[in-house]
Length: 287
Image (cartoon, rainbow, N blue to C red; front, side):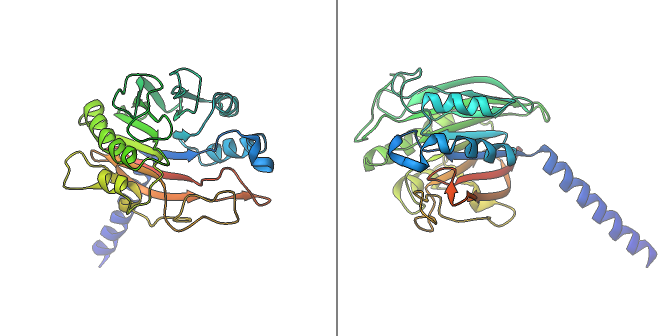
């Protein structure tokens, strides 16, 4: 009886220790469409929200944040408000500062950037400003190769924002994204974040998660070890609640990444959201 009780206690302590080690080695990954800076948003315009966006990132201690719709001045504002972070990425119109960024901010205390680049979602992916298929707007993917200073592990993170109009563009962007992730990341663990302007049953997402395709990605929410927390829909349009129960913002994983937690963050400040999208966050563990 004593031996059995001692074994149970030992097992519990071991499991607790292993769980703590997993948490310590994990990374907090966020995708966040921060909504472009436009005066048309009136009281919801960027000057009234920039501190809210930054505070949400800092509070949740995100190690990696894929942002969408960020204009150059918004990138500057966030860099000023995120001490200990740096970013990678370019404006989609000229490959420099013009147009929206699909950038990555990363925690420099935890992560070392080894390599980065941007490609365009078009038939000419290396041509800055190129627009693909039937897309209404130029679209890009910015990516980084990182080394985790704590675990010494290497991984890749891709961030994007799919077109909101072109159905062909969204489908072909999904196919091309899968090809590029496989080509660039190879067998290394890969994270893919973004606003895909598509719900789970829509063609682009079905292309991305199609398990019959060896290049497919996995929706982090579907493999989270704890149930999803927060709204399932991710677009609120600055209204009192999300538009519907279906997400358009995702964190996908590949090559053995485990997902410990998954959530949509929906705080308000006196009724004001940080953006017209909820940020989505996942705690992940590299293999």
